[in-house]
Image 1 (spheres, rainbow, N blue to C red):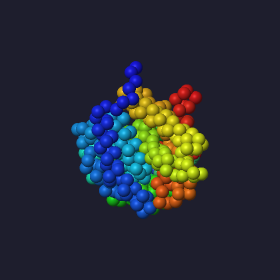
Image 2 (image 1 turned 90 degrees about the horizontal axis):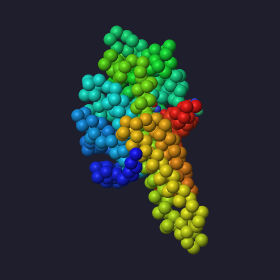
Image 3 (image 1 turned 135 degrees about the vertical axis):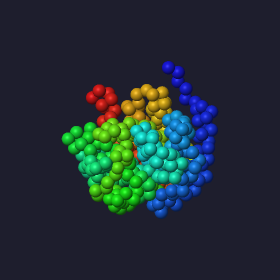
Length: 381
Ligand SMILES: Cc1cc2nc3c(=O)[nH]c(=O)nc-3n(C[C@H](O)[C@H](O)[C@H](O)COP(=O)(O)OP(=O)(O)OC[C@H]3O[C@@H](n4cnc5c(N)ncnc54)[C@H](O)[C@@H]3O)c2cc1C
């Protein structure tokens, strides 16, 4: 099999344009929105207008029809400037819209996917519950058949875009006897009676993202809101999340690269004991290790994306990329703060933000423990 690490001309141009957007539109507001703990909805809308939110979706649905490698490029470039702002885009485009593109009816694609790609409607992905994050078998949100629809009751928590979303892809138990084989996905619109935002949540990092707890109390939705087949929700959610893990890895890669580049620059400028700190071998080795880890994470991420594009099995590779890139990001961001000394600990530095932002990458989309479990299962254990 041929090995080619070069980007195509299309991918290279795509990287240049999304990088320019990130530098011009996102970087200047990243710190401000982190401090305000508010999501800049106008960025998501603009990405929609420019066609980026549909990077992976077919042209006939309003997408760009590009490949997974292109999607990782977008995640890396936006993750480079703001993990918090990209998190909202990630959940909207790569989880909520992706699930609708894969499993939605024509009507659902017209109603949610097309306006979602255009940035006119914002989506959220509501899987986690107060007592069920890693363990979906403990999910208690119920959807009970009622007339020509379902009545949903339960609580979802830690939901990104929760308070700003126009619609939410919700996982609920439709057959309690079947455990994880009794879950289904639903699309619930903002304003549906019985559905409310219980509270907005404050966080350690990714503070420019919106996170909320959502409440469903006898929330009735018609049958047309069932996404995919009844009781196949777990398998469909896992298919969506497997692809999501590749994007999550690229996202971590972006934040880690930002932390590394700022550290490299600082090591050349900051003088101690009469010389730039980058002249000390201890610092050189630290930077060499960062560069090495970044490269390894990039190769794992691109490999998983390439396998996905070829239609080849990639569950293990997606988990490996997500696990390695997110843990690498946390290591590099931690070292970047140390390398910047006291100035890296101050709130007006970027590296403190990278340090706070990275932790969630090891938690969301399946924690590092869960990725190791997935890899072990793929090894036949
Ligand atoms: C900022 C933020 C945004 C989020 N956004 C979303 C979102 O948009 N939508 C959504 O649905 N969810 C979202 N989440 C939730 C996230 O996916 C969960 O927090 C995550 O899956 C972990 O679940 P938990 O918090 O219940 O932890 P638990 O599952 O209770 O885990 C606690 C600890 O036990 C470990 N553990 C659990 N089971 C095992 C096992 N079998 N083997 C070894 N270790 C294990 C875990 O790794 C972890 O270290 C978000 C979370 C955060 C922090």
